[in-house]
Length: 172
Image (cartoon, rainbow, N blue to C red; front, side):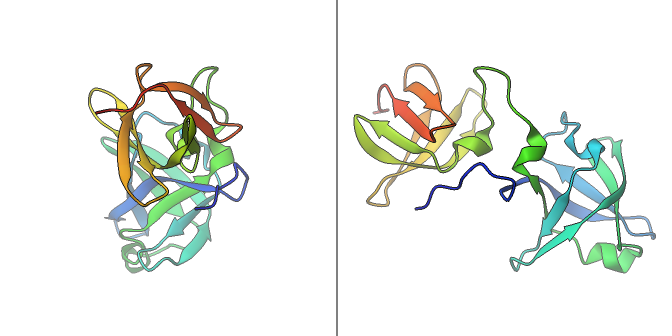
């Protein structure tokens, strides 16, 4: 399990192509955070297709519609071309997210962090969001997985720069 550095080359998934919209190649995106204005700034992006293929593209236009965003991508000019994008994951460079406010962090920055409970306990595979709290999904060195709520009762310290999380307690 290698640690992924916080670099320009690191991409973060922000949406998925739901379907074509109209006949001129416009795409309807299901955006993971509808409150975010990130895509309105037309950041650099790439599409990750189901087969793993990556394709960098530029946005020519983007607009909000209820429950989604509609985008026009450079070189996607027909409904057929848009249909070929269906299901692709829209990714932006991590740097496009900027910096979180003091004392806060982005979930994507916790992925890959080493977790300690005294000694090395495991590594964060991903962050799970539940209605009452978020939780770290930690992969142990033996491959076992454990969910730990991100609350003061369980997490003593998060240091994104050092890629280190210290646990106060373990769930039973």
